[in-house]
Image 1 (cartoon, rainbow, N blue to C red):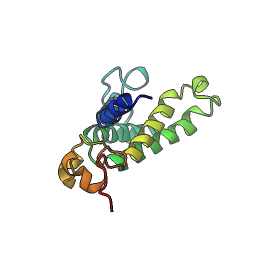
Image 2 (image 1 turned 90 degrees about the vertical axis):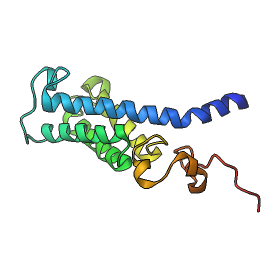
Image 3 (image 1 turned 30 degrees about the horizontal axis):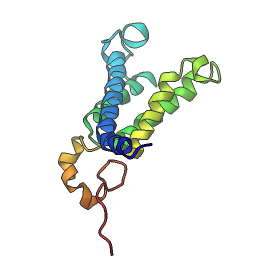
Image 4 (image 1 turned 90 degrees about the horizontal axis):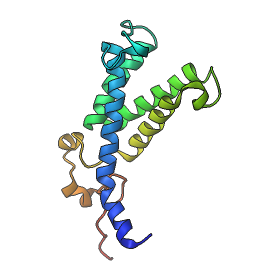
Length: 161
């Protein structure tokens, strides 16, 4: 890959990570809102899930709260791990009993959300997250903390010893 293309892709990493986190969080929160409040077509084609019903209502609550937290970039890694786990649970308890593969058992969304949230948990929120306001970390201090690109690598060269 040409160096200039590699540099452009590296420069875009923080923005892409932030956009990915926002889109995944928004979509997940919409699923939760649909199930809890009957918006966006409601739960499973209409209506809401009765309050407290296991596991549907609790899953919808995780979707709404976890999705909003990931979207905003607040407690992102913890929220993403919980969201990822809830989708793994959904896949193995709801979908897999019908068929082996996600294409056969309608579990594609569960699998994709599970792996997307796992990626967010590992990569972090990126530089444009509200949690940066509370922790005091920002892109300007990233070279000092060693987390400039959201993936644990400093974008500044280290001085020669």
